Image (tube, rainbow, N blue to C red; front, side, top):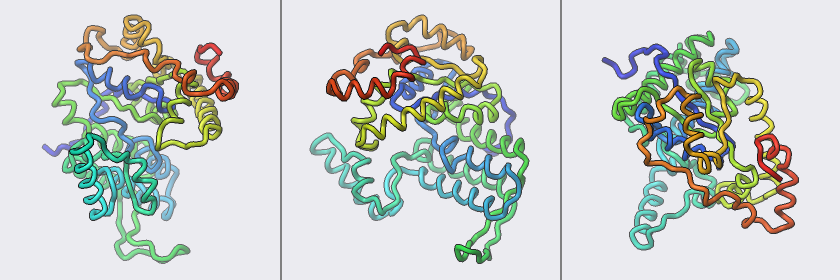
Length: 349
């Protein structure tokens, strides 16, 4: 039987999201330690991120627009290829990069931070992650190929000449019906995750892409019986964590402004969705009240509290790091900027 055999919505996936740096990864690890669940990979950025499944469904379901439809499909193809393997798309440069990293690691046990390499060679296409590598290249390619076969109705190999010059090939969608597109998307994701589920003996899967929380409405339309776990961490600690990362902005004011705007959108999502589908959990509570939080999480997700293998625990060591990271003056600015958000999620200022 073809691995992409059309499947009904038999799964109720769990989507973990947040601002980033808020505990999404450890929550996915925690859920993965449950006997009925598997986190196939960390952060499948082919689902909700721009140019992924969500963008494709939103664009094609608006109706027929030959150039708009073409570019939506073309962007998905490009994005699926970009995140297929980590590193540079240029094979020669990627060979040199990987070889240098291996040599450096054999001597120093350290690798060149990928974010630094990306900044240094910004004129070359680069991916920090390899979704295809994590799933297995052959399996990933076959699933993407079948999804595109379902979504693309016609391919004009001759192309057209328009304002921007030659567009070749030109893709036309097989349908603009939203429910059909959602079903194609479910089939794709179910097939992509099925081998990992079978390997783990799991009944369903989870994903921890941070943007899952922001796009919870789409995810719950895609999987009506799914659940969204919104991970919250002290916003001041989130700001401190972002300020330390080489891949993030070095401008703290910009970090704070982005976080405030992101929190506002997340609060809107939280307030607009039913609590049986979307729920916020504080990272700190899992460290200080592990049994209570496990019980509440399992009640929300419909899981057996005894299903966890005990391999993942939540540590409190990084809590309050903003007090050490920022000077007194900067800490006051951070508190003032994030006071409204802190109050909403129950953090004292």
